[in-house]
Amino acid sequence: MFDIKSQSWITSDTSLKKNISNMITRNDGTLQWVGMIGLPSDSMRLYQWNNAAYGHSITGTLMKSKEYDLGTPMVQKNLNTLYINYKNGANITVKGFGSKKGAAPLGLTSIGGLSGTSGTFQTLKLAVPDDFKNLVSFGIALDASGAISSDFEVNDIQLVYRDKVVRWYLVNKKLKEF
Image 1 (cartoon, rainbow, N blue to C red):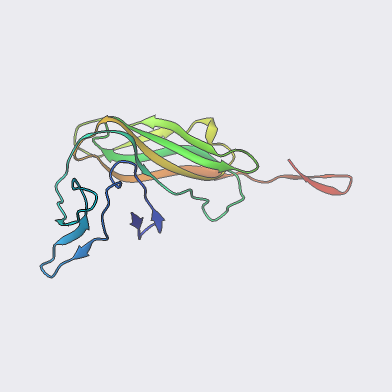
Image 2: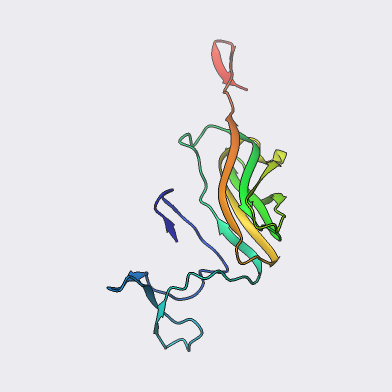
């Protein structure tokens, strides 16, 4: 899915693997699409959008963001803290990934797990592991490992980071970075 507000693509291994067309709005105001959900591979059908929440067991990635460089693609950054505002987050793990200058990319790495089934929004502060030091870009993902509440919702995610300052020193009249 393409998020117009953030200008980013959202991918999912679990909920987007059905063959469906773009959504259309009919004259009566309903959202519909053409797809092959639960039908033989050569059959197409018109479906109407159902806004009802549903819960089921999932194992795998629910959501993975793009990598953000925050407008400075070659400046190293240290991620310190992640805040996430959510409700009903049982069996959800927040993970991060990123790229380092001159090093292998950082694959999906666990930052922390969500909990709570109270049905009210709560904000969780997660300390980011040292693996997230010296990244030039980073992204986040939400992984599921079991029954997900039908009304699981993320309201906001914030990352606290600092750009690393490049320090130079003079050696034999040549500048060197350290």
